[in-house]
Length: 395
Image 1 (tube, rainbow, N blue to C red):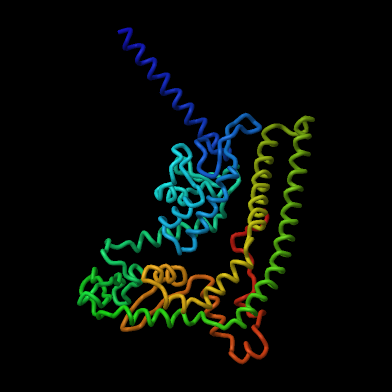
Image 2 (image 1 turned 180 degrees about the horizontal axis):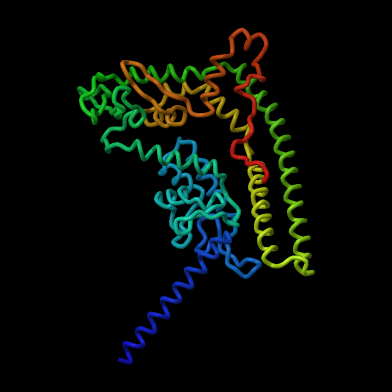
């Protein structure tokens, strides 16, 4: 009987301890504190208020940001991203062994790198510094989701246009098949029933894709004009970001002065603690929004010119690059440039990814005589810099 009583008392103690622990972790989450082991790119430290928090690990954080940037392009598989990470010395924190592909996938799915985190199914705004923008995180999730949807059965042969094309009649995938041990044909899987779309040779598809990429072609002179246009627009954009940061910093300072004045009123007894807690919590949330917007302006298009010129050069040479590549390389190039590819009655329909859609539209609109005689029209609305849609107005 005594032993049973001790067991029950011990169980009750453990249950109470577990409940208190859960309450404490929930309270930390509501305060924006990540209460578990720090994910890659962060480390656990003791905060100024005596609570354990996470802070940026300067040795690993840049590589975490690179993982998101590499994968967001859609030009690299998880295996390729993992290989790039290993080549830069990314290893398991405890084992010291090269990082696994599965761990890379977990990192790319972890919202904590945006400054937010999930706890017990609920999203919280963290107090830690984000490593990637919310826009970049969402683009990575879109690539992951898109590849999950397009997964097909494993094939012995790797075909250039596998997973790229769907049938315009029924929406099923087009798959490759070798005929007479040398010719590659594509056909609809017929998953939804018999489909009228006939077989098509791989060479025919390659020609159609080449014509599509030809819409991005322009000469070196136009590339020079476009590059100059990027530099001009970048100067304007930098000025806009600087002015916006100044406005946001002024707003943050105004709120900080309010908090300080109200704290003095609380000490002097002019307001009670409940009122102080209510207004201070709201003003701190507004300050957090200001800091988020400042961070977005500070990190917006840091490599604007270099990346822009690189994309322009890639667009200009896309058709030539495509023609000289092996099947796998062709597929990677097309995944990066186009999407929503369908084949119906001998016709290819596809959409360009951004910013290649703008390049195709602009090269189509610009008359040849205007380009060669007067230069590219940098005031063209397609090329004008636009306000970041993710930036929120001040509260």
